[in-house]
Image (cartoon, rainbow, N blue to C red; front, side):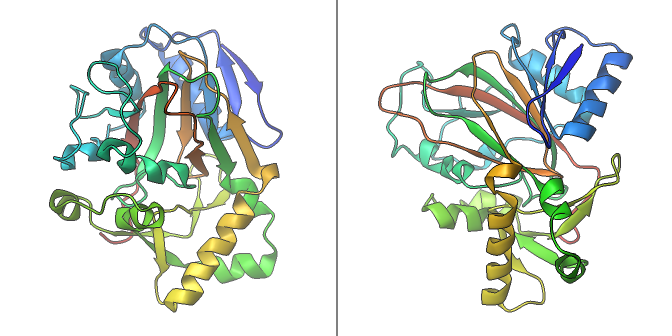
Length: 291
């Protein structure tokens, strides 16, 4: 197992392991240590990984979350396992679907900077994304280091943010991109949560901003003032020096820690190319402040 940094602040590529095979305790500990330190790890050449093997691998890191796509009746799922979410522009026959298809519209919030499942309790801990089919151009995933962004805040700003809490809502990110509103099932099963604006990482001890396009309002703050603060912090945290952009190759497995990173997908020519990814996530060990 070899670890090579991919960015001056965070992110690393790991080679020499096959995640489709059972991994021993020493390798798993080293992999978790890399996640704790780098926040994002890229494991290339994992073409052997199928759906069941991906789920088995992810179970080494915690309790798997079920896909929120289970709560939509107007966007048929191709996946046979409840823990899997497809991020794709193809149907069950492998053919491209229209960009205005409901399934694609529901994926539009992924193009905004976000932390996975921040609107759930508990929120997402680690996300695992495996590339099955990738376009020759576009469709990259960008990651932002929220620890480094916090470190560069001045002391007065850090003091101001200490103790603030934020309402996170799936409806908020849908609204921002004009995606379909919440279904009745989503409203029941995915209620708003309240999350801290600053989090401490239990392994590294570093503090980080906890932001997301799902973040709607700051508790106890005027709506306009709170949203302006969230926008200001997001602009700060996603400056180029804090961002690593991953260009996908088929077989890549990328894992990231949602407690200390944000990410977003970039567009690609959907009318020409196919893209097919599998996402799984494990739940955080800490529940939201309030559900």
